[in-house]
Image (cartoon, rainbow, N blue to C red; front, side, top):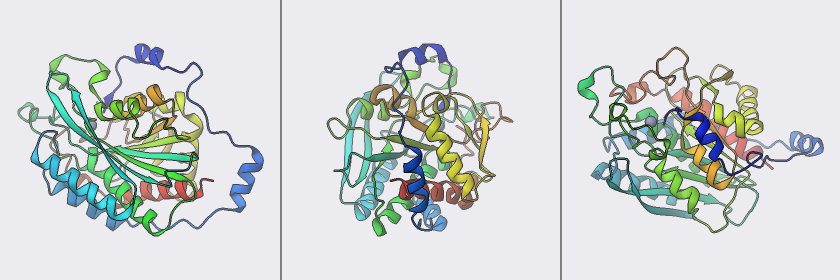
Length: 331
Ligand SMILES: [Zn+2]
């Protein structure tokens, strides 16, 4: 992902006139949900951390590399061990430089027959270029992507493991996108948003099930850095404000107010904009935003320092426990 540059153009291309559908709940529904609040399992932060370590052991999961192939096989096998409905969606997408990339979106579905469902998603591959590294010599080196890739997957793998022990009452799709971060290097002078989120663009236009829809989605991006700050991303605010508030309220209620800040963040080009644009599903980007850095993201974004040292199991816990709370309490 990257900070959004062409705000006006893209906003106008959203297919919906009133924004995506909003989840409708009456006051009575909410009251019933309060009294029926379920016991949410404990998210195991050490387990999530171990899933991050396992991904990094393959090396940078850059598209078209053996590490990418091996990591896809690893994630798929683990997901299949926890979920009986796993689909690996292959796609072939053109990159900004004309190269054709083979991608794999990995989708694990609980209760696929239910219309009442939500999406939890992230991207799993690594950016090929550390083009925001302080040292220009590193600009063509791959990013290890501990935070910008592996952290979200680590969280959702632990969520899957929890679901395997206790199913949520609603349907849930865990969607792991490929080819999110293959956008042009900053010195290439190409700025079109369409070169980002290639895997999610494919999935949103060719969902794994015909006529697919969901009530809403939550996109995890850079969810593992120590002391991470999740601010209110701009597109999520415009098109999924209710869901964004719900997620932040849940996180604050269960004790993670130091991570989930009710502060406006910038607009971000990320997988959620394509899901909203093509599928008309409101999606919240849960992403580490930081007003003190030049990029607006966490300090090691798209650098060679995005490695295991920038992962804290406590942050994985804050996000993972919030995801479990949302999923299990949803009626
Ligand atoms: Zn990125």
